[in-house]
Amino acid sequence: MISSTTNPHVKFLRSLRDSVRVRRSERSLFLEGVRLVAHALASGAHLQRALYAPQQLATTPEGARLLQDLAPRYGAFPATPEVVAAAADTRHPQGVVAAVARPELPPRPGLRLLLDGIQDPGNLGTLLRSAEAAGVGLVMCAPGSADPFQPKAVRAAMGAHCSLPLQADLSWPAIGEALAALPTVYAADADATLPYFAADWHQPAALIIGNEAHGFSPEAAALASQRITIPMVGHAESLNAAIAGSIILFEALRQRS
Image 1 (spheres, rainbow, N blue to C red):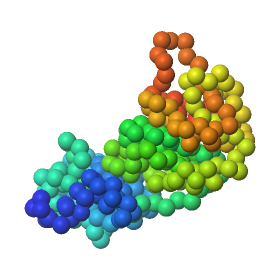
Image 2 (cartoon, one colour):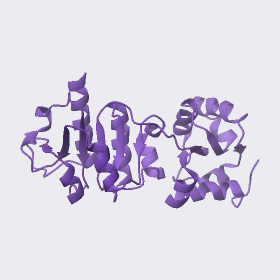
Image 3 (spheres, rainbow, N blue to C red):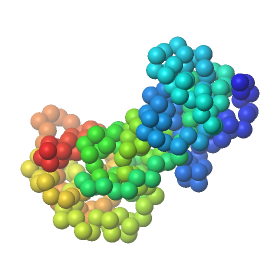
């Protein structure tokens, strides 16, 4: 039972939690909470390290099942609740933190989603969750976006990282090359005139969702072949980026279904 908050396993998990550089070099996801860790393991993710508090996990049925799964695994270490909390990112941890190898999933058929300067990790994670649910074939994060692998984004994505093709740290030339063969690249724009539901989502296409405050970048604007909007009758100037993107993604799914 690990009882010291200065244990090397705690230090490793903290470094993943806090440093984008370490997450990139280790190619790892920092996971916290019963549901996220259980989902990752059930999805076949390779466990690199885990700290778990047995008595805390045993207090719920879901935690008890995860405890049975973790106990025999190489790289999983029982620890006191204080040790787990020292490595955790939330105020009230559920008794487990873990690092798993980042899934490297190839692009699949379907809509391409480009996140252009999405800086709020909660919005970014929510968009990943919606993209996975809507069957998006590839999500690309443009320069200026938040790290999609930081803990808050991972929690908001609710397991999408384990099954959604996702590419980060891309240059604009690489993004342009990836989208060049598509007949249409839509950009969500509050000032556009074409309603999102009037767009043709049956054909191969990409969707650009821009920065929460400033819209899309000049580089993204140069890639867009058509701009679409979500008509509104209230007084709001625009919708939250995650909500707007989710609405459009599920219209694309509706048409393709």
